[in-house]
Length: 457
Image (cartoon, rainbow, N blue to C red; front, side, top):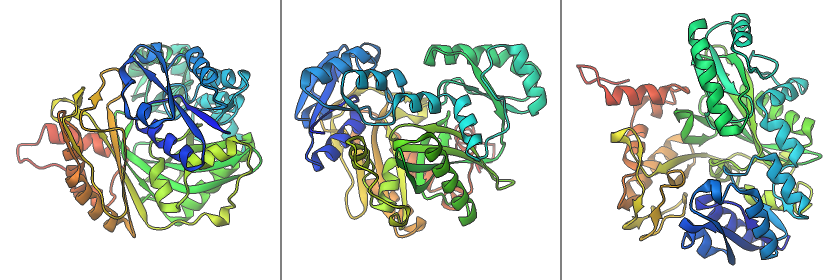
């Protein structure tokens, strides 16, 4: 691998460029009309323009990205996360063009990207799954019958996608009859497939994911991440490891993730996502992400392993250079997603010009970002502007460092979620790790509509 095209933008493109450069690999950026002066385009060794600002006309156009790779003389393509990263047809198109796709093979992406098929593979590998339908459903009457067997409440999920799109929780048959067609339409619009599947809704659950690496023959885990703090199914704060599970659950869950990866011959970095029932201690596989995750830096900080560099080495044909015994966990890491949004106005995205930026520093503080004074937050893409990641010898020292670093983070020109993140880590329930997947939204609702006494939980 001598020249790598990064089929992405923003902070993840910057992150991949840096990892490639550390390995002596030339980099090629792609840029839409909105990104010709963006940081990833400036950092790369060369840049290829791929179309208008709208992602649907540039970053999501397979032919344009593959043509850019050919034009630039690249021999490999890294998809990052989002955009085309979990599209099996994109991985296949890259391979058909004689280029190396930095990720698993197209059939594995297709298999694990379909939630129904992924659950079936997990079951075959002896990995526990949430009780639910064995296949996708496209008929509300069939859904009603299935829900009666599973038992309410049930969760509707898009069979072909993720990212929170198409998800509904329903408590009875009348809600299901209304929610099913709406969720199906949303799934069809987002993923081109309106099939849904149903699973038991776990009322009090943690969302815990396991980072894996595989070379097609052998797989290892790099411990777990806590991802329960979510708003509208989107993660807000992530930690490594999870403060809410014991060593027995951790061991069983990480071993299950490795079994699943070896079952499918997984190559590259990937993430197996699980729900942990707080009431029973049971864990259930829910899906696999066949790409690098937004929150991968917390795993890097507790293990000292560069996950993007590992992806590149595996894609270049090297066998996995690590044994499980080589992976040790040290300390605790926390990541904060900082977005150009106004929490006081319903988290409204706030595009605009960045007048001034000051990034935090000091020991064990990392900021992954594309921000620079004078840069522009575009209305055409998601509102994530930076990820602030801190490490400490234990969770409390990481929290102290996080508060200090968030206080040093300055962005003038557009509102950001930095102050809200500081407010969250000051909450007793956060300090004590007493939360589940519903905690943050409940707290935000109480914050926006306080009780007469002004108390929130």
